[in-house]
Image (cartoon, rainbow, N blue to C red):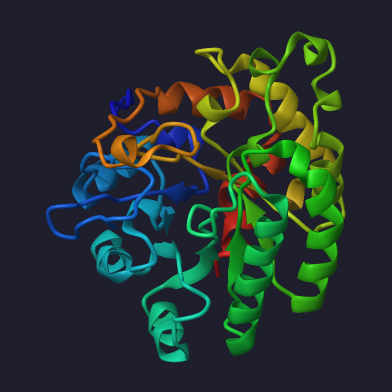
Amino acid sequence: MTTTVTENPGKALFPNGGWDTHHHIFEPALFPYSPQRHLTPPAATVEQFVDFKRKLGLNGSVLTHGMSYGDDCTSLKAFVPLLGSETTRAIGIIDPQTTSDADLIAMHKAGIRGIRINLYRYKAMEDVELQKKAIIDHAARVAKLSLGWNLTMTTIHTEFWSELAPFVEATMAKSGIQLITDHFGLLKAASMLPSQYHEDPSRQPGFAHVMKLVRDGHLWVKLSAPYRVSERPDYADVKFLVRAFFDANKYRLVWGSDWPHTPRMRVRLPEEALTETPFLEVDDLAWLKSLRSWLSDEEWDLLMVENPKALFN
């Protein structure tokens, strides 16, 4: 979780404010983790995130429910007012079969504006058909109450997008719900790709399908956690992905820190999942400065201010 920042760089980086649309809070001493969790993170408290946000110069955030808490959003509803209800929105996790209408309405009143699909629960991390089922179940549940919520789903198998893309287009159009994918859709920069894709990373599996969804307005993408898509310590090769997304559709992109920087997504054996795993060390300020240098003033303002306000109103 170590983060290198200097005091108040935000005057230069965020003259119009800035939103972190993907971060977590973990306080297991107050809210125990689910016994069925896929990862055991150390504590990352409200106070620590508030300090992180202040030092970077951010003024808004979207708290994303950690999957280590399962579908119990008690902690999420408690954290939002502590972070500041006026400047914080949240993304929860539900069980589409058992979460009641009353629960969803209470979540909305608590500042929750979207649902994260937990593919671990569906045992769907390696199964594209089960991923489709998870989308259908959650879209139907969220659409029922017309709360204006969005859905977030991220697959570790980018090759699945060839099947997911037409399905997502049809399902989201029917439901009227916005779909988001985290961490660049887990499309990879050159340093994390096999050698045959180094010269042209756009040839990697899933790239064309994700870009078409973004271009056509059917998918939002969080430009978050570059360490999940690049092996370079400076993330310089991520520029290719950033520019590809902006050239596809600058109105469907938001930024997230992924604080406190949990490891890459994968299926873990039960013993490993229950063992505390340390956070990654990330220089968030250096990453933000690189990202800013690749964008125009208009693109930066859309990414950091206007797009998140539109998505998480």
